[in-house]
Image 1 (cartoon, rainbow, N blue to C red):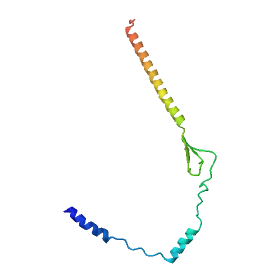
Image 2: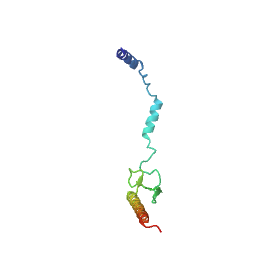
Image 3: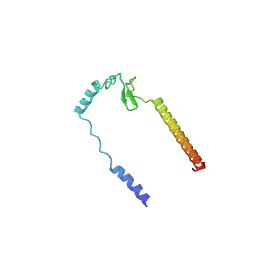
Image 4: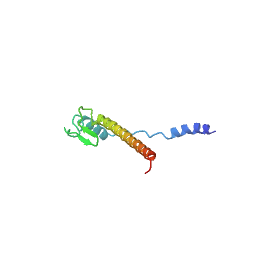
Length: 121
């Protein structure tokens, strides 16, 4: 029943809401369009939007550099090697400190065991 209602009402709604026919453009509008199309573009795509600088700008670990080619808008430099080296050094330092702490705990346990075995005075 629902499917029949949809099948009957859907075409009626589609045809009932047809858009109004567009009115023909006025001669003034056509003249303005022709004038706009005949004039040169206002934006020259060959000139940069900002003045390039030779010194790169730093923002945290990122370095913003001037574009090299016409299609580039921004050059971003990230020091991947430095970040990886820093991460490896942090992991090695953590391993070293963990091993040092474990060795200190073992020495402290051995000293406690020797104190327990030593005769009391």
